[in-house]
Image (cartoon, rainbow, N blue to C red):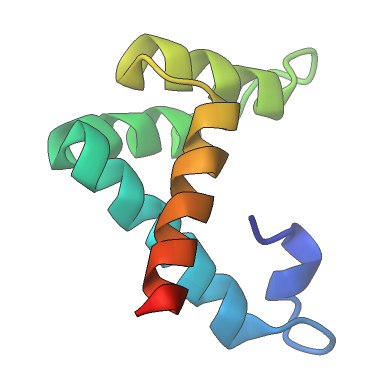
Amino acid sequence: LPATTDFDPVGGTLPAAYASSLLVVRTLVAAHGESAVVRLYREAAGEPAPPDVDPEAALDRSLVTILSTDRTAVIAGWRSRMSALLAD
């Protein structure tokens, strides 16, 4: 998955970062449906987390509670889809 630095307009690779991110979202929508992914996005991008809450841990909890999956499965699905697209 793209890192924050990949989105840096000076040193990042913006087109690849955005394309990769879009593919993750499309992969999630294909597996879980648009409404579930919208709920995940709203929860992840909603109110800022309190300073004592790790945003990565909060996202991991949301993946489990909303999509019944985890980060490892999301990355595996994304990689599989990326490989399939590159093979075409």
